[in-house]
Length: 151
Image (tube, rainbow, N blue to C red):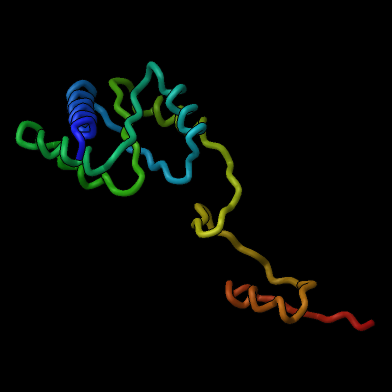
């Protein structure tokens, strides 16, 4: 590893330790499937209320573990650091931060391979598909009835 990369990592770890010392409250936000532009809008809306920290979980864990002797309460943070999680540091009210995050929520189109946040129910109905194309409906366990038109 080059010296520049080590310096960047050391600087990042130092920043995490400073944020933990400076801010008594931390809010965890799951940041899956959020674009960079949307994330930047969230950062802008949080200005003056808190600081959003995104980064490598391993480096954040390293920084927290280095402070566990002085601050054993940081142990709870290690349990939550799984997946794509953002840490929002604040001195203010967590309710204000939650309101800002809720206001920045936008609807998104469904994408393949992503689990729906809510239960999706589809009613069985007549399809207009040829019998050869109905196999895809069988794969997703979708109930259907196929009536062929008589010409």
